[in-house]
Amino acid sequence: MPIRIDFLGGKKVNARFNGFLVETDQPVSDGGSGVAPTPFDLFLAALGTCAGVYVLGFCQQRRLNTAGLEIIQTMKADPHRHLIEEVQLEIILPDDFPEKYRPAIIQAAQLCTIKRHLENPPRFHITTRSPGT
Image (cartoon, rainbow, N blue to C red; front, side):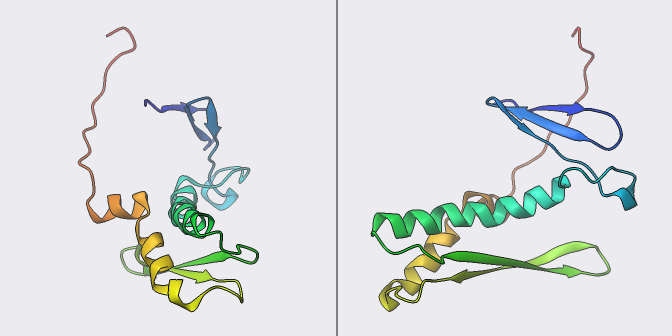
């Protein structure tokens, strides 16, 4: 699946794939207009929503109540390197969530494909070409 990246002026950089448009921008403080999330913010949100897909699927397969189900994601950054060094996902469970499933729902969140890719990162190969070649 190719993803096409478009540059729309200012600091706006968008991605197009499978009929979807994902818009990004930079904050005003970084020269953008602040009308869309930054690519890094989307990356962080993708981590939590990916885990959420597995958590939700776990509950749905077992017909468990999902009212109030939530994930709170927080990050700890290294102030010197300006990189995230830890991502914490706290799964907020409904009051009637069965105790016996608590370890298993954590395991379900661990299955997140993005998390697994970060644990075994892909290689990057970056090239250039002209449109006519």
